[in-house]
Length: 253
Image (tube, rainbow, N blue to C red; front, side, top):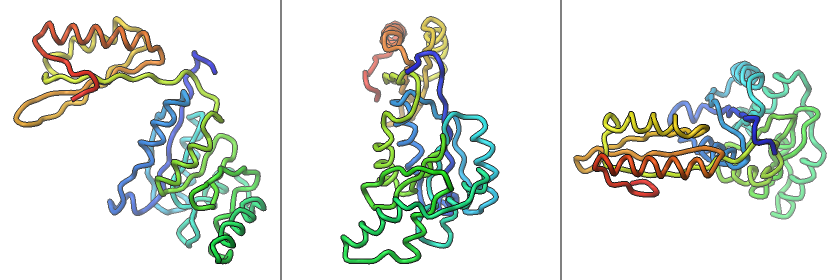
């Protein structure tokens, strides 16, 4: 894998239930974490309703900007599962019943004493030219077409699909992260954080403040593809905080 190029990705979350607040999205965080390990940076997330043209427009906008695009949601057996149709429209291809997906679903339901109904067969529909992403949880596979990955909305199913993709995508060096915490107001250590990034090339420091038990504190996440630079920066920040009178908690508060 290349240590120089920064590979990027976007996530398109599809579903009225997310926008309504009835369901809390968990896929973005698990995809972002997985991408970091693959050496790919998540750069953008969009959430769109179950409206075909809105999915098409969003997909075409982001797939032109990033190396990889992941969609979550809308690939089930019901009438409002329109992701496959929208993806096919965005790519300018037709929709087919994938023979391998059909066989997987037939075996899955037969083994459970059921049958492959027309509704369930919808889960074998893919944009023409697509490959399958294995789904050991519920049978219905995910879809890969070029650098676009169409995944389930159910988080544990998406997790299994990500597991199946591990090591399959081209990326850069994995991101290394180290967290420290201190009961310190951000305003009093802002210059120290700025200097930490300046003195350690390639390092980014995220600051996440909180208010607990009447006290102000923050956790600081130091990130880089260079583990030595991360360690050096953490050491410098720790010394700087302690010099200002703030005890540091390794791993965060």
